[in-house]
Amino acid sequence: MPVKLRTPASILFLLITVTTIAAAQSAHRERLQTPFQTLTLQEWVGRRLIFLPMSQELRVNGYQAFGVQEDEGAGQRQYDALVGKVGTVTSVTGDKYPQVTLRLSDGATVAGKIYAEMLDGVGPADDIDSARARYRGATLWTRSDPFVIANVKNDSSMTALEQETELKVIDVTAGAGSEQPVRFIVRTPGGSEGYVDVHMSNTNVAGDLQKSNGFHDTFLDVSPKTIRQWPAEIRKAIDDRRVLVGMSAAQVHMALGEPDGVYAVAGKPNRLLWVYAGGVSVQVEGEKVVALGE
Image 1 (tube, helix red, strand yellow):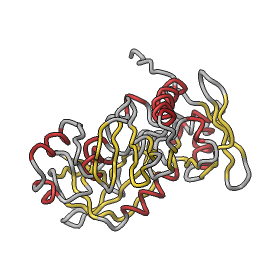
Image 2 (cartoon, helix red, strand yellow):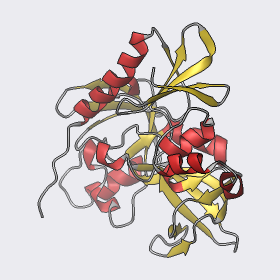
Image 3 (cartoon, helix red, strand yellow):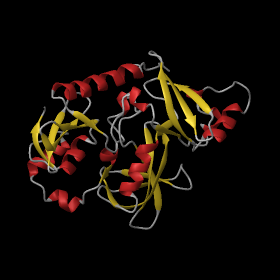
Image 4 (cartoon, one colour):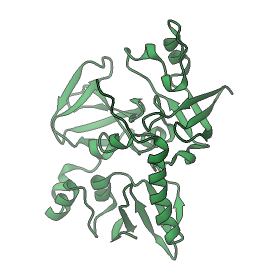
């Protein structure tokens, strides 16, 4: 099978860094710390990463980005020792394949290397915690049709739901992959429970995986009844992944997802600049879009 080559992670994060920093420096803006903000690689230092659970068939391989000895059972032993543990990033070194060093809560140190734009097997713990604080107990709706949830007790058992099905969020935990590190455990109107894994930000998500399985690509957190009352031009812009002046913050989230960077605007204390990878930016004031670009 041919291997698809990807841009090294250092280049991906450099592109995001250049875009967001250039926007900030051009107008002397201050970058704000907000939930679900995409972190550049060097911004990982001091942040927490969690070792994510794997499917049963992959556990025997262990967390390969963190090195596994080639003796029988080593991968499973490493997995059992690390799954669910949270480590604080103490350093990021190297260019081609950056090495990320973590200090675990018990004082132990582990180091992993980024290949194919991700430090495979871990996810940002802050995204999980923030998603749990915001959405546990909330109501969400399915955005796509069909919408598939996995059975909580049996991963191989799936349930297909129709678009705009109402779901109750039972809990938010760690998902099973770095590209989808946040798991929403939900209950359907019929009373069955299942889960869906998503990413809340583009932190540690490879470039070609950022365009799918995002929270706002997967769920609606605004009632479909409310959405149907919006003007047709707003609904079309959301479907086209565009932003219009006058949109609400919720409508921007539905169109573009969470911003990769949020900046305070000098001289305008109530205005924020939302910057997205690729150079798209919008100015938000009072939960409304007041301008596009810088």
